[in-house]
Image (tube, rainbow, N blue to C red; front, side, top):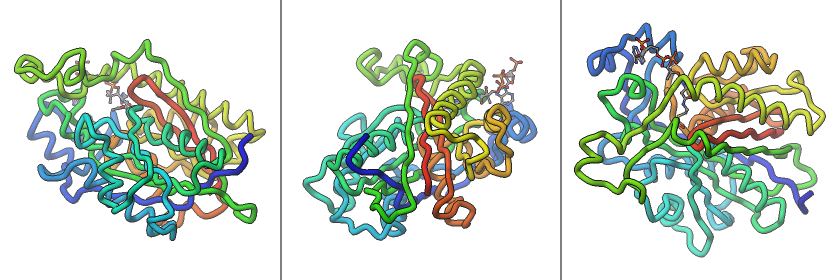
Length: 330
Ligand code: ACO
C-alpha cells in the first residue's frame, strides 16, 4: 500500500496525416482488401512521412494530453516513453521529448515492452506517484513501426500503422473520483523469438548482410502470438478484477490492444463483456503497437464515450513476450 493514489488526469493522441488503405496495399504485395478486413478488421492506417520520427509524433500527443490535464509544464516530475521504434537506439526518446517540451532537471527514460509498453509505463508511473516521489508524470506510447517494416512481406506489412498516445498520470487527491485501482504486468522471455527485430543490436550489429536479409524489420510468427494474446490479456485482466473484488459486469469499458479484431472479439467473449463496452478503432489505425491503448482511450474520452468516474480496463500484449492490464476509475 502506497502513501498516495494515482489517477489519469488526461489523455492525448496524434496520428500522422498520410493514410495507407487496404487498396493501396493490394498494389504493393499479394493481398486483398477482403483478406485484410476479414482476418484483421483493418481498413486503413496512418503512415509517418520520411521526415517524421517517433519524438515528433510523441510531442504532439504530449501537448494534447498536457493541455487536457491543465497541469503546467513545470509541474511534470518525470517522463516515460514506451517505444520500440524510437528516434535512435540512444539517446532515449524520452530525453528528446524532455528537451522539446523545454523541461530541465527531471528524469526521462524509455521502456521497451513492445505493444505492452504503455501498460508497463503506467505500472511504473503508478509506483512513483504512490510512493510520493512524483506528483505528475507524462507517459507516452509512440511507434513508427512502418519504418521497421518489411514492405515485401505480406504477413506483416499490412498490419502496422504509426501513431502516438499520451497520458498525464497524477497524484489523486482525497476529493478525486479518479484513481488507478490496480495494475498487473507480466512477461515470458522464453517466447521472445516469435516477435522480434533480429539485427541492429549487439547480437547482430548492422552490416550489409543484415540489411540485405531484411533483419532490421519486424519478424513475427503471427499465429503463435495470436493464441498467446487472448490467453495473456485474459489472465492479467481476470487477476486484476478478482483481487479487487470486481466482476466483468462492473466494467464500463475495456480498451484492448488493437492488433486484430478477432483477438479483441475472442477476449471480450472469454471475459463475457459485450462488444458495446469494448473500444475498437483498429479499422482506422491498424496496429500502432504501444500507441494503440492510449490512442483508443483518448478518442473514446474526446467523443464522450468514456466519462469521469467510469471504470475502465486497459489491456495489452506484445514483444517480449509481455502482457499486462490497468484497472482504473477515469
Ligand atoms: N494477404 C493475403 N494472405 C495472407 C496475408 C495477406 N496480407 N498474410 C498472410 N496470408 C496468408 C498466409 O500466407 C497463409 O497462407 P497459406 O495457408 O497458403 O500458407 C494464410 O494467409 C493464413 O496465414 P496465417 O498466418 O495462419 O493467418 P492468421 O489467420 O493467423 O492471420 C495474423 C495472420 C493476422 C498475423 C494473425 O495471426 C494475428 O493477428 N496475429 C497476432 C499478431 C499480433 O498481435 N502481434 C503482436 C503485436 S505486434 C508488436 O508487439 C510489435
